[in-house]
Every structure is written in C-alpha cells, then in structure tokens.
Image 1 (tube, rainbow, N blue to C red):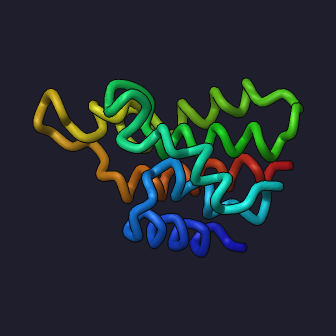
Image 2 (cartoon, rainbow, N blue to C red):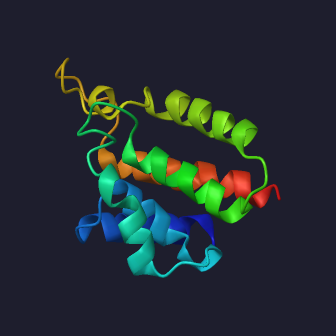
Amino acid sequence: METSERRQEAIERKHAGYNCCQAVLCAFSDLTPYTEEQLCAIGAAFGVGMGGMEATCGALLGAGVLLGIVRDGEPVMRDARTLHRAFTERCGASLCKDLKGRDTGKVLCPCDDCVRAAVDLIEAILQKE
C-alpha cells in the first residue's frame, strides 16, 4: 500500500471515531500480526494524547508502537528518536496540549495533520528496511 493510501485510510478511521493512535495503528494493520480489534485495544488509552492531552500526541505514539511491533524485538531507539524529532519539526510540538493550543489558544497542528505526519514519517522509516 502506498503512503497516500495509508494516510487516507488513517484519516477515514479518525473521522469514523478512532482516536489518533488507533487510526495510525490500523492503517498499518497489514504489517502486524494483530487484528484491527487488537490494535484498537492497544491504542485505546492514547486518545487525546497520553494522559488526556498532558503528554505525547496519540498519532506519534501510534507510530512508535507500530515501530516496536514491526521490528519484533529488534532495536528501535534510534528510529524512535528520529521519528520524534521529525514529528516535532513537522508539527511544531509533540505534546498533545501544545499541538492543540490548549494553554495558548494557538493550534500548531490539527489532529488530521498529526495523523498524516505520523503515517508519512513511520512509512519513511519502515521503507528504509
């Protein structure tokens, strides 16, 4: 599946009620040994970022979780760091509350764009393999 197809699939899932983490995870379900239901369960706690906007964006978390699943025990820290830095550069922050402007009133990156960024970035990392 091409990146644009995965990106569109993730956005459609987000609009269908999946949280950002679940939308990213399920867009890559074909690369995992898990069912969509299992991936939704894995990502269930990361709607509105981790901790209810207090920590990392759910879309970014989904991409990181996917990296661990696909690598299946292989080292991921370097690519996780690359993923985090690239997401922060592209979206303006990595914390959900900052991305959504909860404390400032200035939205840096809407959820759909965070989901698109996470899909693009994890796809690029996985294509290097």
